[in-house]
Image 1 (cartoon, rainbow, N blue to C red):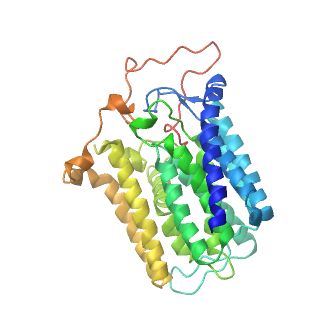
Image 2: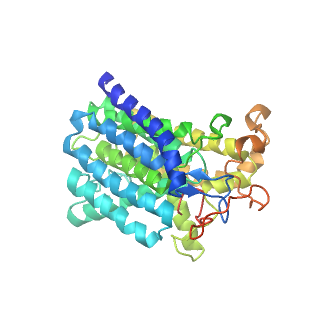
Length: 396
């Protein structure tokens, strides 16, 4: 496993350097996220994290000889997503334009690297649910596209998507290492290395106040397909390293976000692709706990859910009971998002204390920003002034 440290370190360093180098280029080509409309951040922020992470992961995967052709296929699928993500960040592509690309990337990974969901395990206690032929192909594509969009939805506040990816890949890397799947463990380390470098520029803290960047759709899509691929690798081998329901625990928070968002919009009679301000992070911020409080809640929940899955798997708990507990956890998490403000006042003051907003550039505030709060420089004729995205980073 020590041999995997160097690719991960290389991924970290290259991503770090790439962000620094790409920031002025992003300004020159107008790859900038500006406040306004439904966006709540202050200042113009370069969207270079996704490309930088992809470069770091590409170097790390290239240094791992054991990945072979599967690693190359993954990079091809990821390159497709990152490229279209950059175009989306710059030119505001519609969901109808992005979805075919996500499907194409899933097909590349499925047909080129053999990523396929062939069993759902035994979540209902009535025996294993096996998938063959077309059913397997369709479910695989849905799973990969779902993961891509789940991380995209989560990427609405600094640090959330990156943190969720680190937690998920750490758990998947543990299962890989424990099961002797060295290739998978090293791949997880490589992606975590790149994400770690990005978070230095993205986490809500004072030290990166003048160096912030966003990952954009390309970055969230990269994380989504990386996590999806590893979930399939870990749970779909002839001798699975973890049950399918266990990998759902590992990605539980993005999964809950995705399912609740789609269900909520259907109940309201609107399109699942229609953006709104009711994602988990919006609910937390409106509860008054602040950005650091919201980030802390997400980190705690992601870690707790992933650890629960790991412990249930190691304890030999039946898949049906594990699935029932997962559903119960999902209901509890959704409910928590709506009532957490009632309990926040009981949290010790040092944990609730926030630095002044003018020192942290108001990370993730949901209130509309007055035009006089921070004027945006006039843009040359023909260039866009604002973007009307659903969140500062995500597209749903």
